[in-house]
Amino acid sequence: MLSYEILIADDHPLFRSALQQALTLGLGPVVRLVEADSIAALEARLEEKADWDLVLLDLNMPGAHGFSGLVLLRGQYPQIPVVMISAQEDAAVVARAREFGASGFIPKSSPLETLQQAVRAVLDGDEWWPPQIQETVSVSAEAKAASAGLASLTPQQFRVLSMVCDGLLNKQIAYELNVSEATVKAHVTAIFRKLGVRTRTQAALLLQQLESLPA
Image (cartoon, one colour):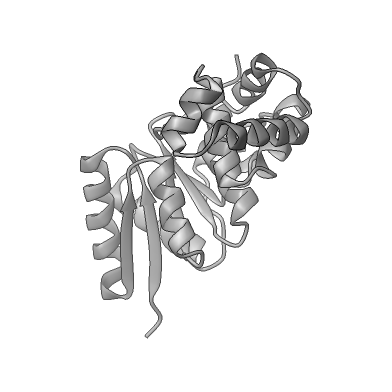
C-alpha cells in the first residue's frame, strides 16, 4: 500500500492538532505525520531523515525571518515539496511563496476539504494555489538575490546568521551553539562571503528582503 510521510512545521499546538486530524481523515491510514514547532526542530527532523513526501510549513515560525525557512528548505532539500500555510493571505504573500520555491500555499482560513485537496494535489506531483495567486505580484531583484544567497547556506550557517541578525555577539552565539568562538567567526566569514556582504547590518538588511510583505 502506498504510504506518505508528512512533516508539519507550525508553532501552534492547536493548529498542528487540527492539521493532524484533517490529514488523517483525508488520507487515511496511509499517512504518517510528524510535528516540529520551530525551525530548529524542523532542521533536526530533516537531519534525521531527508526523504519526506511533503513539508507543511507555517510562514511565521520561531527561528525564521519571513520566507527564510522556505528558502533554506529549498536550498538544502530541493527534492522535498514544501507547502506554505499562513494566516497572512494577501496576494503578495502567496506570490512570494511561489517565487521562493513553494509547491503550494494554504490559507489557514481554508475549510478542511480544501486543505485535504491541496495536500493530495501536491502529493500527486502537482501544485496548489488559492485563487488570489491570479494577481500579478513580482518579487524584487534584491529579494531574489537574497534568496539565492541564503539557499547556499548550510543549516548551521543559517542558525548563526539568524543569531547575528538578532544582535547576538560571537561569544553569545558560541555559547548558544556549544561551539568555540573561532568556529563562529569562521561561520560568519563564510556567511558574509556567500551573501556578498561585509557587515552584520548588511546581512540583517538582506534577510529583511525575505519578510512576508516587502516594506
